[in-house]
Amino acid sequence: MRHLLNPLDFSVEEISQLLDLASDIEHNLPKYAHVCDGKKLATLFYEPSTRTRLSFEAAMLNLGGSVLGFASADSSSAAKGESVADTIRIISCYADICAMRHPKEGAPLVASQFSSIPVINAGDGGHQHPTQTLTDLMTIRSLTGRLDNLTVGICGDLKFGRTVHSLIEALVRYTGIRFVLISPQELRIPSYIRTDVLDRKGIEYQEVDNLDEAMPKLDILYMTRVQKERFFNEEDYIRLKDSYILDNKKMQLAKKDMYILHPLPRVNEISVEVDKDPRAAYFRQAQYGVYVRMALIMTLLEVAKPC
Image (cartoon, rainbow, N blue to C red; front, side, top):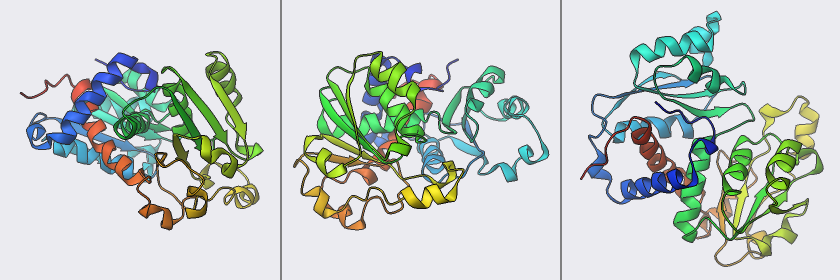
């Protein structure tokens, strides 16, 4: 039995196989309609979520399985003080696989240690979001045809953004990856990402605070929102929340084949006028997330690919 807690839980070769399966699902969706008949997915979401939770549910339903679970801690026995360990022991009696989102870093890891079913980390605090990373990798590969020799700009909240941390850790395993890290000084990447991931692996990167100057260099621009829920001080949030707003004027500085990704939800960091630009890929990215999660559920449940 395997879990997915961190993007590095799968090797580069395994990720390639998973993305190949997701691509086949994309192009042959009806073929997969009954591969998980009789299987149940539990969604344990201790934090609010729209895309991730519904994407998991859509993925399992597309495979012919069923879904049970809760969408907030208030509607679960966590409100009564039940531990993650006890919750997963119980859920293991009801379901075949579990997707968990939790505000505390490491909670899905704890769950995996007490679970008798595969556990998927659907986001833990500001730490990791591996299924979003797999979605990001599929989006980049589908749009550019590769996952190597790319200059990737990541803009916004790089300090608290778990999608950012997961994506960096995943992309550094591919050759020729360069990063331009665009953020205010207060929201730069954590020192452990800089030291243990980028510096240790000899990855080329720049830390800058000007989006306009970075735009012409990029093959991919990964925008993120400044997350109010990660701030202890509302004054700091208000001061920084509008630091970077992507609009059509900035898009004129970009390459003709540069694509914009965003894990969503957005607030105002991407103007709605940009939605019409063919390089805006964030809604396609959300669709790819369903195919990736279908492939992941099949992989962790060891469901055979249909003929």
